[in-house]
Image (cartoon, rainbow, N blue to C red; front, side, top):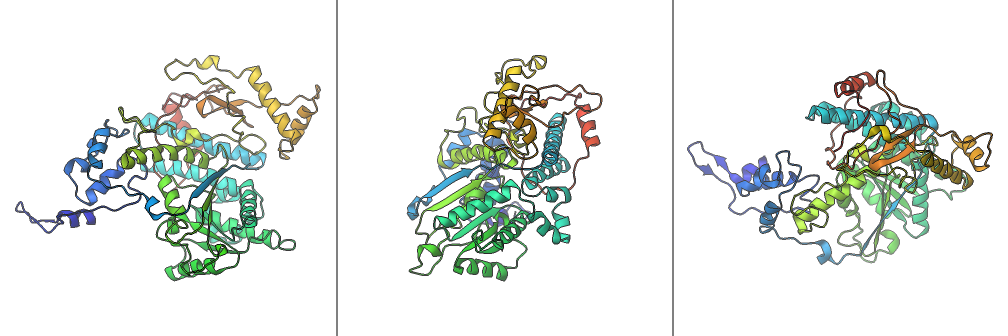
Length: 518
């Protein structure tokens, strides 16, 4: 509002205005973060033409779920688009690295419980027709717990505040080698072996970075130092400005180093490119790893990687996104494509990922519906396993839920997949015995197929514990039509939703164990 007042001036109360700016310019690298209404705030800040300050002009529907192409075309007449190509910077190479979660059977069941509660809550919120702040915060907390479980199930159970009050918990959590921690360590060692002496690791949550730092320190102290990643620094909001500056300088001057960067504290404004003339290639940070928890906006990812890709950078930059297929970060990354497409349409007039006639820009769906449930071996189903197990019905066709029981063929295909995983040594100790029996072709001990539950886009995977709420008949399979609603914005978590409260909300919706089409 202060920018708006500076641009418009002061109302004198007699019909006149005092002050204000005759010429107003908005300079930004990321005008669109999450939704079309981001443009309303930007236009209000500079007191642009009234139609640009009215959200009704930016959308074709009352709920503001679409973008108005006519308004975009008119707005583009008042903008100058300059890309960073004019800086002639080195190329950016981006990679997506998947990894296995490797949780225990009990931990996988707990993860699935969090996901089921999040889906129930979202279903109840949609049925109510309005979004309360409290429900939104509860949903964000459940998603955050699911992210935490991949790094430390103990953290998801106790919470970040408990870890902050009991620092010993950081060391205890670092003793548990989850797939996320092991894969991060391996990726850093690989980059360093390729000549990247300085590696930046970007994450949204400080506690996750603290656990990873302690894990890397413990790994480096073992053996003869071959597993060491060098000196480890951390840059987050708990540090004062002088302390942050000291961490930055020390990171750039260390012989071999890793910098954990909080995206909230250092995602903008931080300069990690050495300024000394004649700095050798080893003095440059040329690689960044996004790990642990992804931001909800793709623009934050872009802003963060630009900390090392800016004026002064002489070498190509390598960006690794460590994402477990089917996890919350995977779902967020799917939604990033929609938001990037929206930004491309508004800023660059690129409608290749948006409907230029109808204004629809959402193609993926809600985050909770993009998440997969874990299998009993503590891992998510692979991308190959998730393809084609259950036919996807057309959106316009009516769905007969009674005819969608899992077929024996689908069960046999899953059994074959698990047997192949066992032969390749990809299973964990929690699922080893039945898989070994399947791999050996034993007729006396066939693999026990667990109940089938749904995933997004009509994909079915096994779940270790059958679900059935009191008073409701559990459907053996649910198939979800392709959703078309954007994810909700991020909010600070407050308190979890108790199962009894969830059941009341679901009961008010009719007791259906089916997520509605979105």
